[in-house]
Image (cartoon, rainbow, N blue to C red; front, side, top):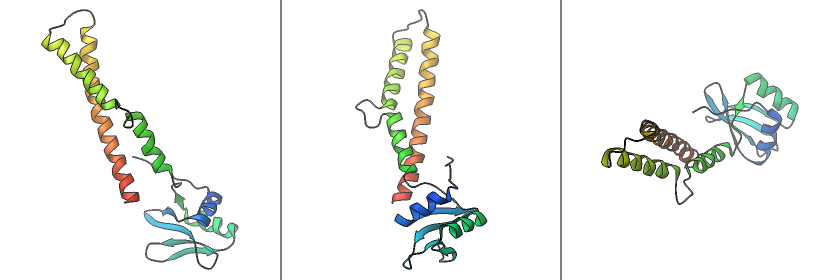
Length: 153
């Protein structure tokens, strides 16, 4: 899954005044944070300071120079919640369960009761498509939940 990283360095400056923000330079992870000296710094995991300044213009110049990108805090949680809403996980009838029951009902109608009337081919195709969608929903849900747990775990 691809995340959309931001290069809005004014926003990064503002966010870093309140909390640590995870950033990326190429394949290196670092964080933007407010330091004890009332400066804002870009610091790698090993403690290397890419930039430390109390001036937003200098901070933005350093971010542009190093081509810093960052994921806006909260986007991952919003994405996970959107997937929960899409899949109906907070509903008494989650989408996966509804698709599974409808697919089972179609299979019963076609194979147990031998229905071969008008539209039976469409019913068969819908049941097969529902089974495919169920697998896609489960895979996406698992991937997002893993990423969410790693971030907050």
